[in-house]
Image 1: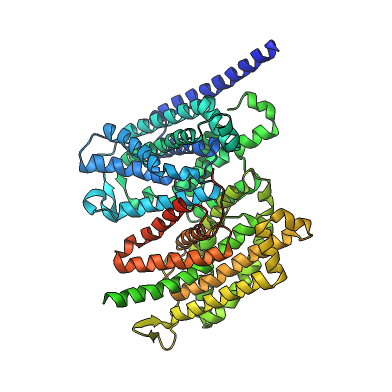
Image 2 (image 1 turned 60 degrees about the horizontal axis):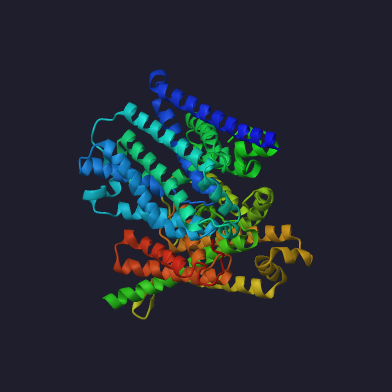
Length: 320
Length: 294
């Protein structure tokens, strides 16, 4: 018995070290991109989507919510950064963390919706995302630039914003790994699988959900903030595009919701495919994206990692 | 002036609300029976509008003649789509949310197809009724909108008759109430579900023709607007509740049209959303429904 427990702990440690090693190699490899690749943009957006999908996984994979207005956090992050930098002349390094805080604040405003479940939550979240878009594009032009948006001014610094995005990705991966292994993650999965049972066992359901929600809101806000810095321009149509939510959901689902590695793998696969589609079929890209979604849900609803784990349960020893 | 504007807003609200009610009704049929949340509903509707547009421009067919054609062809398409898409969904961990995502994929494909066929320009059906407007008391109402109102009432009545007086309709209502029990009494749930999918699609096609009459212009990308309105309507009325959708639709139409009287046009969608959020927090199950909270 003792030997078995020892080996279990050993296996768990092996798994986490393998995952951390993978993340380390990933981050190091990405850190070298500005020297090795001329196509910084591809890698920048790869990191952005990995980060978005991993953060989404915290609220969706671990906690079982489908916030279809997830883009609201991304858009708020982008706009707060743009307004602080352009209108108040703040340094970008200060504006980005504040944009993250703004996202968390927004998540607190939306926190009451967490008591809704399933499809109700998804629809209300979608509506809230669209309300944010309408409100921002109707604010006075001196603040948010109306429907034209805001140009951040300053000269573009793709390499600096690239490393900022890398830092956001590293923080997201660290957080998602930590959540999966912490009591918070265990409590979240317990609530997802049976809320009443978790409540009866003494899990503080509203508080645990709220923590997950705030964490899941922080990273897309940072992503939006860094992306605004990278592209140097923000407008309400692209910053609040439902397609951003959809892509996040699709990438995370492709890898496997509820697994730590899934969203990273899914984003890597689909961002690559998306890039190929854009290069070769620019006209049909929307159609093909839709087709990928339909095929994914039809044939692999648990995603790559989820399906692997189900087919070969012994892989659980090695895959997070 | 203001009383006149308010009357006008009220009349438009009822007309637009009737179309919204149909929109919600077909979403609710689909959700009630199949637990499929149709994210592509708006695209189905716009496709119906395009059918009417093409029939009018190519064959000079009256929009009212296009309505049954759109309804029947969409019914057939929906029937086929059911067998193509839905059976595999049942194996998913969370069929409801999976269907939501899958139908989002369908909506992208449908919008892209319409974009390829018709281009991105805004279009309208340039048919005019004679006389062009009718005077009702102090208010002038466009005939096209009145025709659309009459048609929505007729379609709504036909639906009510179907649901409450015919055997398939009763079976559908039973399936909404308890999908397990209805299989025990010997109903083929697959055929019934295909019927529900066909009915929802057919209704969407017919609604699309009405949308062409009521709203000034449409593009291949108008779909999401109608999907969202449909979602709001069914959440307002209660998910999966056919009568609730009628109530929700009229209420939302009134709120939206009345707000254009008092507020800038661009802000008027917010009133609808505010209504939605208010209802969600005061009565999360919608006006007529029941829902489980976490």
